[in-house]
Length: 104
Image (cartoon, rainbow, N blue to C red; front, side):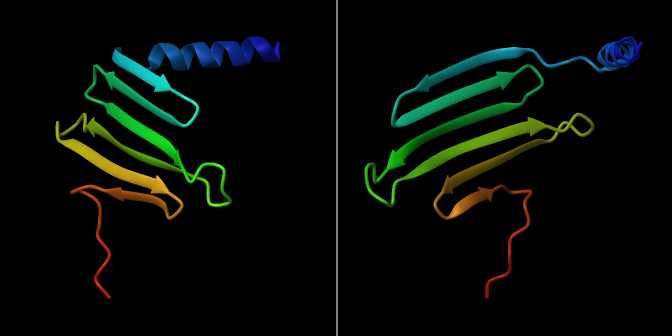
């Protein structure tokens, strides 16, 4: 009986969901020490990412990822884009809509 209730609830959520975006393009290239991927959806969402290992075989081995993601606000139609670097210094996003820390 619990399974039926959960199934009905999940089915209702799936049916009530607004139109889902369709995948327009999806590419990936994954190697042992570098990778890249791109996904583009029909709702204007786009994700690009490429990464590589650096200092392979040393105690300072790390992954460095460069990428961007963008989306369109469904209410205003405004497009937002975030570019980023993720490395041993953490995730470092940039975008015109993101707040900037004051200079010390």
